[in-house]
Length: 162
Image 1: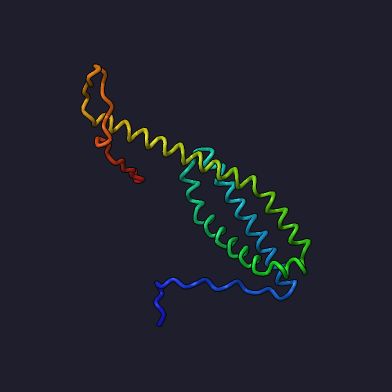
Image 2: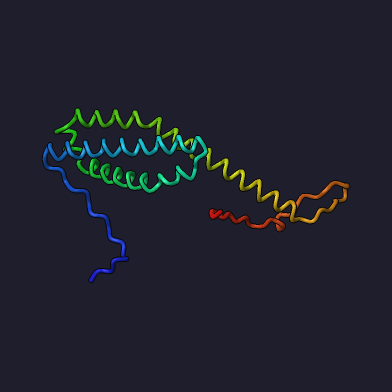
C-alpha cells in the first residue's frame, strides 16, 4: 500500500495529438488566464484601498488558478511544435493576450511590494521605539543621550487575534 503522505512526482503533461485537443488546451489556458487576471485585479484594488484582510482571502483562489495556469503552460511547452504547426493563429492570439496582461501583473507586483515595504517599515519603527523605551536613558561623555545598544532590542510579536 502506498503511503498517502509521500509526495509523488507530477505526471508528465499529456501529448496533444489532434487539433481539437490543441484548441481545448488553448481555450482552457485563455480562460484560466482571464480568471487569474480578474483575481489579481481585485487583489490590487483591495490592497490599494488598504483592505488587506479582504485581499488575503483571495489568496487560495489565486494560488489554485496559478497552479492550473502553470500546468497548462507546461502542457503547452511540451506540445509547442504541434501547436505551431496546426494552430498558429490561435497561438499568436494567446501570445497577444499574454502580452496585454503584463502591465496588470506588473502593477499588482508593485502594489504588493509597496504594501510589504510599508508594513515592514511600520513594524521596524514600532520595534525601534520599544527598544528605545526599554533601554536605560543615560548620557555619554559628550553630554548627549546615548543611542540604545543593539542588545537592548527585543523581538516584536504580532497577534492577529483581537
